[in-house]
Length: 98
Picture 1 (cartoon, rainbow, N blue to C red):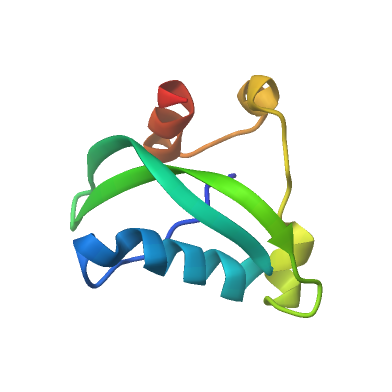
Picture 2: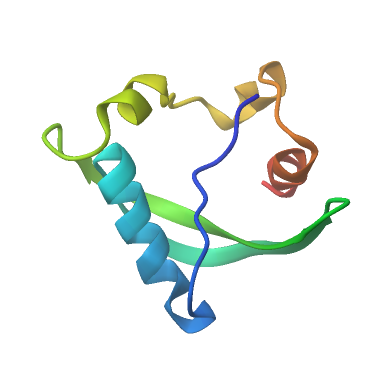
């Protein structure tokens, strides 16, 4: 299953900064989170995810930064090709919102 980069945030007001830091530290990709695309609540039998989804502007990539395994598994795909990839239900909602 494919998914968008995601991370828990400790402070909703600082969500954009935490997302930017997570993407950089995990993948070595520099992004600037912009407009909120959607909010979505996904309920599991034992927990609830409250998702905030942001569009991000790509600012570059640092090949020296990030977790190598994550960088190898990461894929850049065209938005029109997303239907070819299996996403979990919660991430399918994101694909639909884009």
